[in-house]
Structures are given as structure tokens and as C-alpha cells.
Length: 185
Image: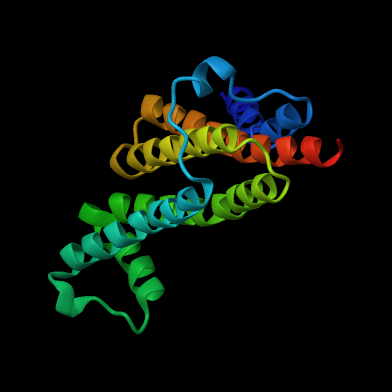
């Protein structure tokens, strides 16, 4: 059992480096996928991405008010301390609170790579439709990620959540790699 868990943990950790390696190798989201999604304006996608990484935070505030018995008991003077205390003491809301916070943190962590990809693509004049379609796939994968992270904790949805995270990182890396290719031409 320990060896199996070690192997799973190693594969999970390796997932972080696979998307940039794939993008560097010229691989990424296949064209048959990109061909069926609409292209969004990449800068609007950045704004929507900000909404997406803050949505779990807003949900955490909502569930914090439920866990404390009302909005008036929300501690804006020390929200992180209150969150830590609630996760440790409130069994009814501990799971949803920690998952909301984790989804929010993951969104904050993934945003800079996506922003770098979008800005690099725009600065190097990557085809706007191509960049917009990659941005669309990124946004869809982040919506799926948030929903699966916040509202489920079973193994199968968790695996699907990891795949949606992988896809969002792959699209960000693909934007950067495409910009790099365009720059070197």
C-alpha cells in the first residue's frame, strides 16, 4: 500500500511538469478540440479568469457566514484565523470551507501562467482565433475544476478535477510556447 501511494504521489507531482514539456515539444490541445470551441477575446478571458479564481472565495465567505450563524459573525478583521478555527472545530462546514479555500488558492496560483500566456500571445501577434480558442478551453477547464473541487470529495471526481487542472495548465503553456515560436520566426 505504501509503494502504491508513493507511485500515485510521484505521478501527481510529475503532472506539474508535463504540460510545459508538451508545449515545448509542440504538443498541446488537439486541433479537433480547438476547432469546436468558440474563440473568446483573450483579454476578456483574463477578466473572466479573475472572476473564476474569486468565485471560490465568495463561496467560502458565504459558507463561513453559515457556519458562524450569520453575516454579522463573519470576522473581516481576521478572516484567515476564523477560517482556520472553523475548519478545526466545525465538522459540518470544515470540508466545504477547506475545499473553497483550496480552489481559490489554486486559481491564484494558476492565474499568472495564464496571464503570461495571453499577454505573450497578444504581444507576438499569435493568431487571435487560435489564442481565443485556447483561452476558451482554459476557462472551461477552470469552471470544471472549481465545481469538482468545491462540491465533491470522492476519488473519481477528484481525478477528473486533476485532469481539468492539467488541461488548464496545458493551455497556458501552449499559449506561451506558441508565442515563443512566433517570436523566433
